[in-house]
Image: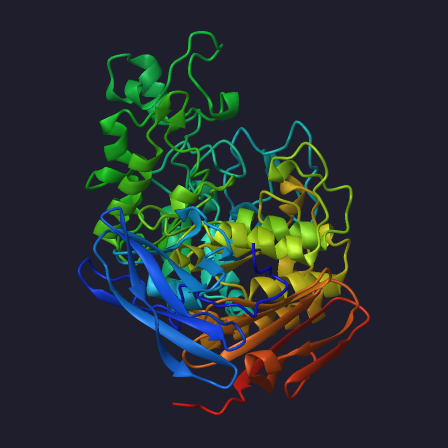
Length: 614
């Protein structure tokens, strides 16, 4: 590889508006592709190479604008197919270098990491300026209304921590409900977020509700459908959208589908499941759990019930009556897969089609826990929960806590500790395998209800936690804050992280951190370059990273470090100078000096100091 993430003075292109004239064209339309090339990078000729009907075609790049430091080159190409893969090549005597989404290479590379354009409508426009807030309904807030305690539950006092790994795991019930959420919507609004992602709110036999007993109603102990209707109306007044959580891979053992299937072998529900006489309960459970019967999408009746039918589960909750803004799909990468059966793509495309039919601007984001690039080719999920390309590498870069293992990462050992180069290259592995639009439609997060909390990962280092938070809120994608992170809640694993928020006594809240998060959320919601901008790495060192987010209207420079550093960032090679400090340490001019004792984060507006030529 010719270039590395430590040196970006090479040609640059990404899928953002500066470089692609239309990210979602129709077949037959022309699209202009642009490349930004430092004047120090020499070549005799340059081309864009793409495929038409599977055959390679090459088109000359022509200089569109010459600057003192770098120049813009472009080519207009016709979109012939549903998916178009393309890359650039630069040639001269003794020079032959490819630019694809993974970088610049001086040898032939395969097309798996080519840039991609998909000739379909992309993600809903509103997610570009959205920040979500993840709420685990049982643990956020309780309204005080009385609900009958189900027989499976082990009631707990609100401010007690979860007991953790015990016979009560999954059964501890704190009494949070949707009315409690509605009563605290002003807090959510003041935080600055404009979306709430709820983990499941369907009836179940657990506090997490990933074992749905029904997909037809809201759990009565959360307030039932009436509470959801009220919450949707109240949230809408505050311009807050609500995202639901659907388990397309499995249901719960208490579901009527399973009861009917067991009682009547000739019923259509019998085909909804996989049956196995070798296990005690007689059916296949997800991860062999009897509580989570695996769904069998060989059944067209199940497909109709789940997503394809007029009154399907997917469509019902997106309808105006129920008002959800989209779905997060649980274990999306496992849905439709068991043994020799691989119906995953059919189910994924079916869910997308159903959503497009009933609510074209609904967001479809999947838990794609162990990343499969084809799931994000633009035809299925809009995006994924970006564990692989963001959260995991960030954890590995900032973690200070050797007691947190790599279990959530699928590793039977402690999570590795990596440097800045490894962090960025890990991110680039993810980014380069998918279309740009799938990256920006993915959910970026530091933690979730399934993981340890970031405050525990960094051993209560508030400055380091803030560096991670600043990176999440300035990186491409849709940020999601797990409720309580903004006030410093801790947790060493999934169940331990599902702690309640003490609304009555806020003396233990980290109010200073909360104030900083509000500032960063405001930036993410309102700065054009964070809404529409691309991603260009400027400096990558062991302990700090610097990157540009640039749109047609503005350019922002982001600095993130994990520990004290003394360094100087020279923007002269990019033809930029600092115009304004938006967050963190103030700076001016083309040379930025950093001398900090601990983790630090800064965001600056930069402007060109080049004289335009031609």
